[in-house]
View 1 (cartoon, helix red, strand yellow):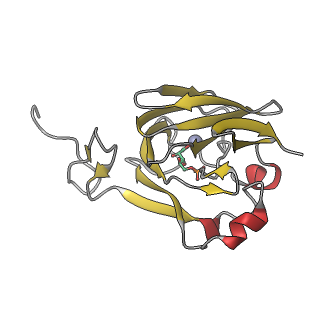
View 2: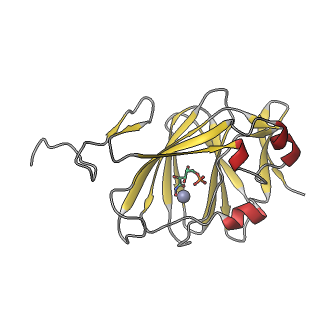
Length: 193
Ligand code: PAN
Ligand code: ZN
């Protein structure tokens, strides 16, 4: 029907605020991660333990118009990473490979300053700088994580296949082989010992 707005599964429109990057609509799901929920991810674990575990690190707004695992569908999400550091390491998302390894993804920055850290399977981590308007293609077989290197919230949009799934375990156990650390006021990707 011409003029009919996009509908979520519950029949209400899904709207994106292009300024803020945020999503609205009944079908939008929300999740969040605090420092207490991210043990072992940061280089300086004792620095993490000294901080308030209730501190918000990031939240995700997610639109899954089809069931997770559906082949051929797409998901859409907004991630908001708070500014902050654990020791010298910037607040960041957990990071993951996709469960179906070869699935790719788009990230696009709508607010703030940061870095997309990419690690191809069996390869070395590298970073792409994120700032207003940067568009990032994450190839398949590549772990991805975002760090907020600025003083304000970092907001990015993402879209990925609905059957991609998540593999967090490999990152929890082995990390990215490098950490994004502030050195003389600048973000530097430093190899882990
Ligand atoms: C994103 C991420 C989101 C949160 O939607 O899931 O930014 O990061 P973590 O999942 O690593 O906690 C995405 O990459 N989906 O595939
Ligand atoms: Zn992903």
